[in-house]
Length: 203
Ligand code: GTP
Ligand code: MG
Image 1: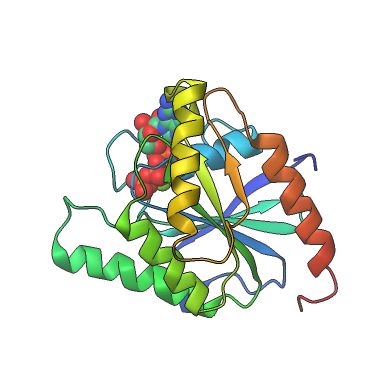
Image 2: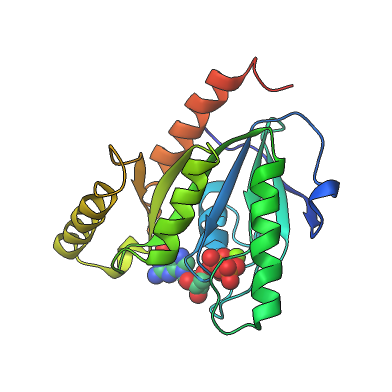
């Protein structure tokens, strides 16, 4: 799939006000600073569509972007940001879970994990929560440019092994870098396929 048009639609802190248009939707979620907003800019080929920052906790709202006039891409606040207050963390947590429980048009969640790190408890628990709530998801390994190819392969293998202790199979996954754009074609291809599959189901 090619992205011909990408536009910001709306930011929300209230799930009741999310766009009502019946378009297939894809959410980008993961720990703060993992690279969600950067990935969205990389996929859409727009430098500043989603706001990025080297300080965690940048995205604090649910941001809807409309792509090619026919699907939504959603940038969510990061979970597990340690340096914010407990009240704030709970607020984001609730916003995120409310989002996933509300969006009937959500086709797939992309769970971003930092390719440099060991599997993190918070990510594994979040994926289990998605599973329990029957929300389809894929894993997106980010910042692959920061590792050698052998280290990257090693880390992915480790992740797969960890996943297989909890799941029957490894979910679909993508290896990406917002810097060198790897994974872009694969992710857009996948979204394109899913869009075709759900075409008649979303109303
Ligand atoms: P929050 O909105 O705070 O939850 O963070 P986020 O997940 O949206 O992360 P964001 O895209 O703002 O990126 C965080 C930092 O990581 C920024 O300094 C980015 O430049 C950097 N970054 C993101 N993706 C990559 C990548 O693929 N490679 C490298 N080298 N840096 C990246
Ligand atoms: Mg962000």
